Every structure is written in C-alpha cells, then in structure tokens.
Image (cartoon, rainbow, N blue to C red; front, side):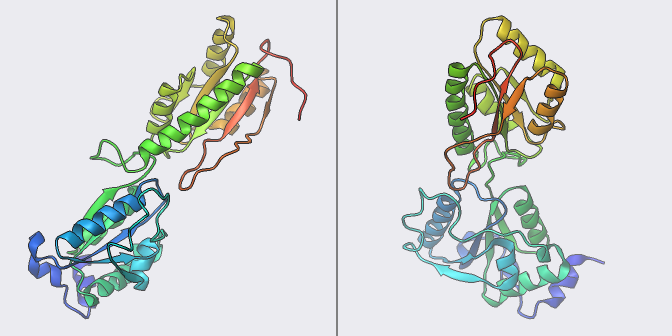
Length: 302
C-alpha cells in the first residue's frame, strides 16, 4: 500500500500546497524548524530564512522543538524582530528535539494535519543527517521541503560544508593548540577525541591544521601499535610533545586505545581531561594526557 495515500486520507484539511505547485510566488506561508543536535549557525540560518521569506511577502511560522513540535502543533509566527539579535548566538532559539512519534505513520499524519490546518505551503528543515531523513519522508508525502544542512559532523551527501562545521573545527583546533603548549612544557602526549559520528572530516581537518602527529578516522583507522610506533619515532627525533587526534567513529576509541597502550607497557600513565572551557552549541574535544616510557617521569598530581 502506498504510504502517502494512507496519510493523505487521514488529513482532514486539504493540502493546499499540492495545488499550488513549486511556484515560489504562489507560496504564502512557510514553516521553519531545527532538529537533531544543535550546531553553531542554526540561529543565523533561522534568521536568514525568516527575513528572506518576509521580504517575499510570506508569513513565517517557527516550529518549536523540532519534529516533535511539528507533531504536537507547536507553532509561533515569526517577525523580523523575533529573529533580531540572534545571529551570533549559539544553539537554536526554536529548540530542537528528535521525535520517535514522527517515525510512525500516525505521527506523520498529525504533522500533515497541523501543516494543512495552518495553510502552510512548505517547510524549511535545518539539521543534520537524521533531520534531513525526516525532510525526505515529509517530501514523499507531497509537502514542499527545503533542507539546510546543519551539523558539525559535515557528513551529509551533496554539500561541501555544513552549517556549524567550520566553527567546530576552529574550536577543536583552539583546544589542540592549548594542549600542545602544555604538552611542550611537561613532555606529554595528548590524545584528543573529536565528534563526527562515522565521518572523520572534523578530526582530519583539525588534526591537519593543528599539526597532529597521528590522526585516526573511520575512513582510515590507525592501530594502537602503529600509534605507539609513531609516538616513539617522534620522541627519538627529539620532540618533547605529541598530539594524537581520534574521531569518535573509529572502532578503537580514545578510552580503549589508552587501555591497550597501558596494557602493552607503551604508555606509563594517563590523566583524564580537565578542559576549562565549554562553548554554547559545541562539545569541547575531550583529551587525555599520556606519559610514554622515556619521555618524562610521572609528575606529582596537583
């Protein structure tokens, strides 16, 4: 059975946008929502969508709390003033939430009904992989959807760089730069684990820019033995510090890597991260300081 037919039958109010086609001039009312993990630049994207649509004479409704808000009918009309002063603010002022209910036919039926009852002609979805999967599901039901790729992971097909990715790289790079300074002072190797899910872009770009000695990503994973060999080679070349960048999607993440190296005697000891900063809409890259045999004696804790 065609799913779209079943959902269309469940909507009491006719879907007006279907009759209007894709002519932008005929669109009078759009909705904008943010979904999934928040990313730097989401508020700027909401602002751009809202003010561009208002300039075209459209009405703009913000959907609160992402896909769940679309199911629950949480809408608020947006004016130019409503999106003023948010361009530099992290996160999303509309809120973001994933929705298990939207994955079900009954949930999507509610979403369609809420859109139709408000005569909304199209939806702009700002989010990452999961959010755009929802966009596709909605478009398959006849809704006009525009997806804005927004994720620090930069793992969406069809776009060179996603909203939030550049900021994430720079914040990670800043953390690496600070860790390198400490590493040079105390003869330490630092293991930095970045976000990115199954995509190594964030780890690769930050690691390259930060001059990491080793970068391990899902697309090209470096074994614990090879990491130890590279660090030993760096020590033998006279280096007093080292940075290893690990993407979270690798099979052997930072925690398991440290345990492996310690069990083999390739690392003397390690300490947990104590990063002193956290950024709105960003997760600071966790790090672990390691002491390799021959590099430095174990410092006193303080």
